[in-house]
Image (cartoon, rainbow, N blue to C red; front, side):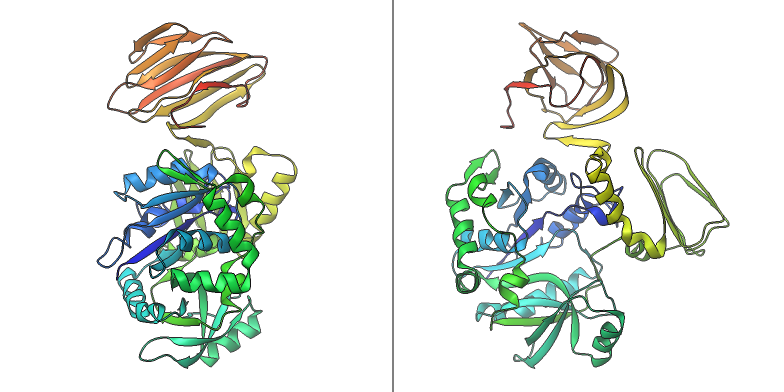
Length: 465
């Protein structure tokens, strides 16, 4: 029987700030290779015995997720959109409700690194008979160090030739407890990957959290198809309490089993972990982007769109983005969440929004902003078009720097080529489309009393926003 992957693509991305942010978290970045973590997750499941994946993501990421899957040649069964984040238990309930009762579902996060995909796939195949028999199988990573940042699973009696009953789940331990776990040899890291029959999981959800299951199924029943997405009902899903599947079911069920696996796994849970996973050079440095490092050791140095020069640094993390720079002792880099919390409290855009903001038609980034003006660079994919819209308080000048633009301005529609421009007055109805086969790049100069993103009235939008 084929296994249906269920890929969870949520998360706020705070531990890798300023690269990863709430509106563009780490699974959407290429941190280890040319493909993003989401793309790598989906591609490793394009193997014999696996069905089309079901992807569950949130409202803000839906078009980015769909575009990245398309770029990777992945056609999902569906992309289910959660209106708000509610942790993993509701997502599991949605996936199980979508499936046939005897379907095998493989639940896995989209933001993990797997260096040994063949070992992972073999472990899944080994676990399939246990799941088919009604066990809820979690995959235990063979620990390589007494990590205090992971939850642990203790194995119990063996279940046939492969897998074990779960004796207990353990929360993140202190250093001494983690060392004791490692010495005992019967504890594994909890990677949050599950394999189960849909009906077995639904039965356990009904037994342990019937209100959560009922609310999720109500959100599913009242949901609706939107383009190539399935939207869960906002009101019903927002009313559900957020809870992890481990707490809701796995720590309470008698059906839990664990399948040990050594698959080169990492959750890339922070800058020190990414440093270790990025093959440091002979000086122990990882250099990403335009970086010049002199007499520096053991450091992670990353530059995005600018030159970073470092002299005499040791065991530090420096991440220089175009709108924010992080400088941290590598041993304290996990405290970056405190920075994000402080920025959120101050209402700072840098806490959640990246410089490049993605839209279903492409993306834009700010180049300059001041009193009564804002300059942006827009890129529209072939076939992409912004909504038919108008602005009350600003006018716009568009200059084409690449591609071919079709412009609607009032009652007129016309084409602009490279180096040609047009002017959109405040209050004038307009639309921009990519009429060519190459990406369309526009420099947009906004001027007016107010140039915020919320000064917009959409009259028609092919993306249903």
